[in-house]
Structures are given as structure tokens and as C-alpha cells.
Length: 564
Image (cartoon, rainbow, N blue to C red; front, side, top):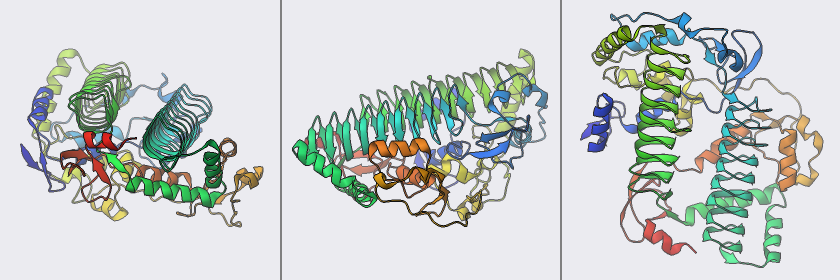
């Protein structure tokens, strides 16, 4: 089936497999394309921005994902997860003379929200979404890490700084999509490597500089074998100063642009399309995941089955998830957000260990609730059925002005995720702003919230000149206010961070953490598939390299021929 997206006006395909899934879940065929569905899911998730604000319950200053001017209460995590408040106190009746989304927004503005997600961690208050970790600073999406800073999507890492999607690794800097690596700098899409620098697509290698597409090689520079002495000399040259280090990064970009690329990173996967997907089966248009089956149009998923239109599902696994964001250990969800170990829930937000709930916020261990109001099983089933029928006949009503907004695109409420206009975050604070960036003017045109990224204070002192060599950097740099060379933002160097730079012989960065993260993410391909032909044999491939990009992209068979 072919449809025209009601937001972008572009045609998109709906194969029979998806039609069967929609029928199984009891939802209508989407009126908007998968990319716009993903944008909506991501617009409800803030992974990087942190603010200082008072807890709405205790008045204590806390670090929170929510800015101080939010219309809803925000509680310190210990209070939010405690027993001092009851989400059912905010319950309300459903009004069948009105649509569901306006009523849900009223509930949204009343129920307290969790400040940040920092669990079972030590000295990790200044992080977003971190668990079972120690001595970490300004990371997001981190589990079981130690002494890790300014990084994103990290699992079981130690002493890593400025990394993305780095797992089971130690002493790594500015690395992207690597696993089981040690003492590496600017290494991308590689595994089981140590002492590798400014390189791409290495497997089981050690002591490599400026290399690409190598397997089980030692002491290579620019893809040529060298002696140990020659390797040490080249490494010393690159790490001599900030200037030579930046030249190495520039060379890395050249390597990426000129080297042959495999069409996708799919390992031990069957009948699967997407990128960075491992040990998966029958998955279509899926990215960044492992051990999944029968999933489609999803980003970030693990150990999950029958998941469609999803952002972040798994850890532990999920099943029968539709059009939802951040699902953990849950099954049979439709249009839910931040769902932990729930079952048979629809349009719920920040609920955990709940079953048979509809349109609820912040509930824990509850069943048969609608809009945070408790019902008997019989009452719940009757009212829930009526609400679904009501939503099937309720048009999406614009909640704000904006010709490109979801609720202005037509369609009915049932099956559509919460409109972006209702999001608890400004668009540019959200993950959508990271994966699908829009200018302030475009955000306004869509009727969405925009939060200016302003400095929290003004510094009138002299500009601090960072020494070119790490050996010349004094301890008191940690007391200085530095200015980002690209954005003009102020930033500081932490003591643990300086210790890492000295240990790794790295220059102190001249860019602020936000700009460094933005540039790292730009080095990853978009989570979008394009039709393209293999550069060598002409075979049709689906890849994240757009057809107009200059890189040489190869199918599996042709790529294996160039790997050394």
C-alpha cells in the first residue's frame, strides 16, 4: 500500500507485514510517514539538557531535565518514587464532549514528574538517564560505567571521555560505535582493538594509526605495516600539540570520506535492514539494537519482538509495542511514553508495574485506571471501550498555531502519539532536535516550543589561553572559565577530566561539551535508509549513505574483497 504523509506530503510504502501488525494491535494505518512518527516520539524525550531548579515538593535545589518554568510540578527522584504523594489524587473523569488529548494535557499539567533518571549510582548527580555507575559527569544513557564523562549511550565502560555508543571499553576518547576496545582515540565502528587512533572499521587490531578496513593487524600506519619504532614516532608527532591533534582529526574525516564503506553494520542478522543491528531477525528499518525479531521502524531496541514505530525499547526486552517511546520490560503497549514493566496500557506516561491502564501519568503498581482515576474491572473495560471509539471519531484538534504541527495534519486521535505541541520539552531540548534538527523559525512554524540556549551568566574577565601541550597545562585551569571557539559558550575543565587528558597525553579541548557532542553525532549517519547501488557491482542496497554522498558504498560481497 502507498500513502501520502499528511505532514510532509511525501509518498511512503506500507508493506503487508506492517498492515498485519496494525490489525493485530487494533490501530489504524498511519497517516504520516515513519520519519515523522519517529520525530514525534523523540520530541518527548530530553536526553542531554540539564537545569538547576527547586523540587516542587521540598524546595530543595535539584538537577533536572525540566527547566524551572515548567507548568507541572517536578519532584526530586527520591520523593517522586516515594510514598509521600499519590498519583490517584489527580484523577479526573473523562468528558465525552471533548477530545482525549486536551483532557490528557490538563492531567499532564497537574501530575508531578520525576526530576532526572539517576539510579543506584555514586557521585553521578550531573547526568541524565544513568544507572549503576560511579564518578560520572555530564553523560546521558549510561549503565554500569565508571569515571566516564561527556558521553552518550555507554554500557560497562571505564575512563572514557567524549564518546558515543562505546561499550565494554576502557581509556577511550572521541570514539564512536566501538566495542571491547582499550586505549583508543578517534576510533569509529570498530571492535576488539587496542592502541588504535584516528581509524575506521577495524576488527581485532592493535597499534594502528589512520587505518581503515583492517582485520587482526598490528603496527599499521595509513594501512601500511611499520616497525614499533616508526609507530611510536608517528604517534608522538600526532599527540605533540593541539594543532597536530586537530590535524589528525581532520585526516580522520578524510579517511571516512575516501575509504570504502560497507552498506550497513548488520552482524549475525537475517532478513534485516537498518544499521548497527546485531543478532536480529526479520527486522525492517531498525537501528542501534541487538537480539530483536519482527520489528520495524525503530531506533534503539534490544531483546524485543513485534515492536513497530518505537524509540528505545528493551533492557529488558519488550513485546507488542506500537508507537511508543522508552519502553522497558513491557508488553502490549499503544502510544505510551516512559513505560517500565507495564502490560496492556494505552496512552500512559511515566507509569511503572501497571496493567490495564489508559491515559494515566505517574502510576505505580496500579490496574484498571483511566486518567489517574481508579475503576473496577467492569467499569474500566466499559469506559475504555467507549473512549477508544470516541477517539476514532475525534479529529486531531490543533493545540497551538502551526501549519506543520501533527494536530494540524488531519486524522483522528486514536493511533496517533501525543502531539509534539504537548511535549514536556521544547523541541530543541529533545532528542528530535538532535536527530531531526529544525531552525527556530521552522520550530515556530510547526507551532512547537523553542527554548533559547542562553548563557546562565555573563563573564567579563580576560580570556584564558589554553596551552598547546597538555604537559604545559597547570592545575589551576580547573578554576578558569573557558570560552568555546565555535559557539562562544562558557565551559570548565573538571579535575577528573584533566587527569584523563594527562594520562592519555591529550590536548585540552577548545570546544564546549555541547558542541563536541553535536560534532560527534554528525559523524554518525542519519537513521534513515536510502535506495542506492553498490559502487562496484551495481547491486541494489539499502544504506544510511544518501545517494548524493561521495563515499564509495559497497554491498556485503564487494566489501569483503577490500578488507585486509
